[in-house]
Length: 204
Image (cartoon, rainbow, N blue to C red; front, side, top):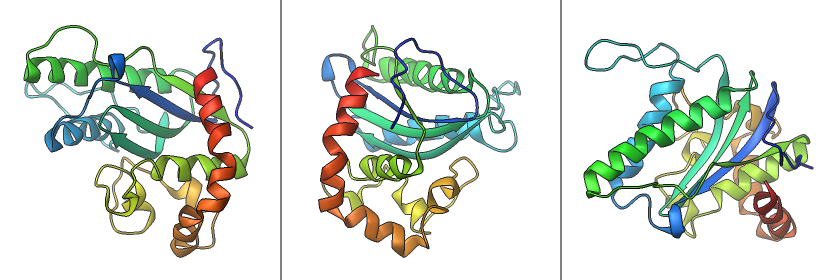
C-alpha cells in the first residue's frame, strides 16, 4: 500500500502518485491548446537534452532525476505517476510546471490569483500490484478513456512515443501491451480498488 506522506517528506528511488486540481474546483484546461502547453512543460523539463528559451538560456533539466511514468489531464484536475531518483526532484518538477502554467493561464484568460487549489498531493507507492492499479486509475479518469487525447494511454499501447514519458516501469509488470489493455478494461477488478485510491489521495 502507498505511504501516507503527511509530513511531505519525499524519498529517493520511490514511486509517487501525484494529484492536483483547480482552485475552487475551477477549470484549468479550457481549450485544447491549454492541455498542449501543460504537456510541453513536462517535455521542457524532462527531455533528454536541455531545452533553451528565446534568449538561449537553458531550462532546468530533470531527465536524470525523475521519470514521468503516466499522466491524465482532465478539465479541472490532473494525475501523474512518477519515479524519482532524488528526494527533491518531484517538487522541482511540479513547481516548475505549475508555476509556469499558472502564469500562462492567467495571462491568456486575463485573471489573477492562484490557478491550482493548493500544493500538489502525493502518495508514495511501495507495491507492484498497487502500482499497476494506480496506472489504471489514472488512465480510466475520462469516460471515453480510449479516445481521450490528454492521457499517456496511447504511449502504453505503442501508438505514441517520446523521450520525456517512460512507461516501461509499468509495462514490464505485464506480458505485453495487449495484456495491459485488457487489465485497464477489467472494470470489475478496478472497482475493488477505486475507493481505496480515493481515500489515499484525500489523506495525502
